[in-house]
Length: 393
Image (cartoon, rainbow, N blue to C red; front, side):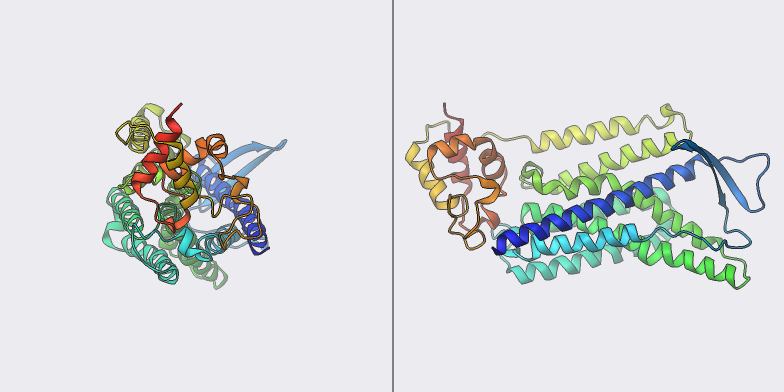
């Protein structure tokens, strides 16, 4: 019953996380596009740096953006912050339910680093916070004044975090933590920089003071960073469904390919939306393509074994030792006892194994997502033997 309750909590949190995340990403995409669509007009109100005309939902909109702020604030000023806050809160709760609750199974792999579940949770929290402080320090340093240098440093920070995570956590735990760290940076940009700076400008206006333009400039920089990080973070957040992404011993390089491809695609879209000629940013297309092809080649299944036939009895032994505790009609593993097997996959017989061969190949042979946390100590030789058996006709 406990497993059933956790599944519903997980599902409800995931659903809510998707809803608020879509709202946040949609707002980010819209406002960055809006910034790039602004044009100088012959007649504009004092202080306006550009305007944009839009048509949607059967009507026309005329939007103005002030270089710093209007002389007076209207009484119905709208703030965009709760989409980011609720995305982070729901994401962290989902991380706790999915990974912290069963840290020894989902977050720890003794073959990577032999640590306890509580130790893994502590490392997780400290590194998520540390990622934000390192990023924020880069932005506030002299490097932050050089867009290209800052982009390289942030890229190195994310890839470096990927290297660290893949040497501490399980494969799926490592990739989800890259996404969680990037998501933390994005939410903290809103909470610690963008909204506080907007509040400073608002307070100055209400007090009759002239706002300092630096606050808006800093907020725009962080908002643009969030926009560029969106595409990579989305892939990292669904990576746990695709074990091939983290099955390679140097899977941290896949992190680099994903960030490079996502950033290049986003740059092409942003600059063309800003009115640049597509050919002027066409270099981003081959960059993204090469990064994606590199990721595909890097994660491609590798053939192993000596080609010798694997007897049925050996396949049965491997499955009985490492799979059946969870994947039986009546699981005996404490995490699933009294509940159906995960995804209703039963692996008690050779017929079961053959029927579920694609999933077994993906999760246990080509990837190392199963057994969870490798609690039973499944060896690479056993994985290769199981894969060879499934490949036999």
